[in-house]
Picture 1 (cartoon, rainbow, N blue to C red):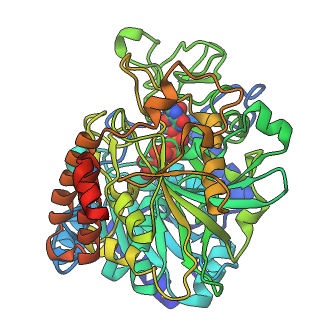
Picture 2 (picture 1 turned 180 degrees about the vertical axis):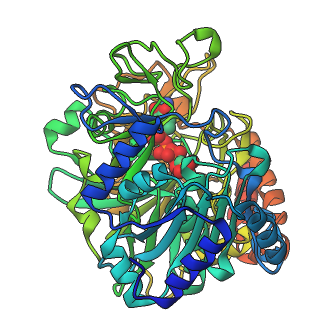
Length: 595
Ligand code: GTP
Ligand code: SPV
Ligand code: MN
């Protein structure tokens, strides 16, 4: 069933000539197609059927043990000029890159089926949406793409109408880490991924298209493609504010997007609506506000830590029709992971009898793939072709010390600096050491498809006449006390911070000005019914001036690392904050400046 689009047919032909599959299957996205693929994967062991009484329609996939996370060192941005990719990306010259990866693709689909997956990122009828076609030899990828994107006939019809699409070529190859590359050619709107079957490396609509390629397109077209959740917060008066929040991988986006309000808030009438949990595309509307869509249709969420107490909405979503990857199972084949209070693991994520000596039962980056429609908190506005207006942008990361619970940037340029300066401890979402502090500007370090310096300039460019930009905030749910325990209870209680953020946007909540931005005083946060340790709130809202001065100095060096690409405006902003910190530390000097 080739398409009506000659360019698409020609590309599929070219790929088939290179990869030599036994068959070609054009995916229509139908239920019958999905059922046939599922049966085939159950038969060949790619999927294991879980307990169909407790988890109807749920299956488990165990990936190769060396293929469980994104591989940043093997992820390349291949632009003609290296400076366009920037020091934040691994780079290879495009001709050389094509030659290198095409040599891996040569003949790699012999004995396999080549699947053509037309997909649309965003609502099918939205002007903000963008389409792509992924070619893969992995039925597991097809099954995941069907949940994560609008996949099949409707997407193909839009592609045929528009005539252009992002080309993504994927093969699991031999799953050999020595023969693995995730390459992006933004100038050609092309992705080539070889040797991994894992999420972000293989589901090309997600990080490869919707962030790396889309961020490049967004820069030239005047919009933003960001690693952000989108959540709607409805207050007791029935007004809903939409917040977009960028946290690095495995730092709480899915959890915040689905949070359940604390008891008192629920009774008062607060509601939370999920629009997206990982990616946000936003663009200025006619009224000057930023309007956002979630380009995805499903959640590829972190399993460990998901429980009734932390994320009941996620848990409710994944009781049926969910693909689990690398979780453990109980004696009666129910999925299990660390943090789940019910059940006990009997078989670990690699299929071995569970033995604590082998480490956790579920892989720390084990995941669930589920349709967003299954979330009890799913917002009907997520299908809105115009997107939702964003009231606030929130940045945050895992910062065990220094960074307070929440602060507000004084204006857009300061907010861009706050986003650029973001730091976080690394997590299991990518291979490599876990718990190492690194700068992760706007949570886009692994995903920005071009030079970070140019990206900062693009962010600054939104501040122009007529713009009604969201306020920018920074949060830190992960601050630890002297005992090494989290000071803030997090999860549902994070609504208390979001309430302050919304009230600030409405001009109603109080704040105190500090050198690093505006902070709530203890009395500006609603803490009724909140169990906090003695002194915890003071610690969460304290600013250690000398340590902040050192931090801002380090941020200056970090901005320097992008050379002339870093906009002068951002340097100026860094110097302004450094000067404010210096004068805050010497009251005499401050008095002198004031007089
Ligand atoms: P990606 O899908 O990798 O982009 O991750 P994410 O940002 O969506 O992270 P997610 O919400 O899945 O959370 C990752 C881990 O952080 C889980 O183990 C959560 O239980 C934990 N977590 C999330 N929110 C909080 C919080 O407010 N406080 C604490 N202490 N942990 C949290
Ligand atoms: C992340 O790592 O940020 C994820 C999972 O959301 S992946 O799809 O692998 O990128
Ligand atoms: Mn993510």
